[in-house]
Amino acid sequence: MAVKKIASDTLDFILESCKATHPREFGALLEADGDTIINVIYLPGTDSTSRSVSLKTWTMPNMPHAGSVHSHPSGAVRPSEQDLIFFRTNEVNIIVGEPYSRESWKAFDRNGNLISLEIVDYEFDDEEEDEDSEFN
Image (cartoon, rainbow, N blue to C red; front, side, top):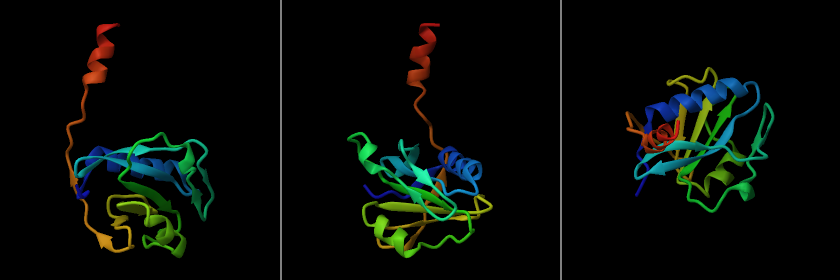
């Protein structure tokens, strides 16, 4: 199923992560539930500078991912040549530029074409939290 949406809370987490990492680039993979991006997968060993981020995809457990996200501290929200090479392995790729707001991000397909992601409210499963509370 094609990814067409992003959970509002997930987008807010991405924006805050980009702000916290600035002036270095933030980078991670994205997990989807059906057609909605719901989670950020931060890989151990990820290395970032003010000009690039290197994801150690070999550290990722054997699990599917829907795409990638990374920031451009320069504020530019268009893919570089290096981005376009990495995009080929992902369905959806998000670039967030400074000031890391809801108005400063764009999504691209694996070919670098601009796509639209609808920001939606998503009901996260609280089952694990409920199970944990039984033991407290």
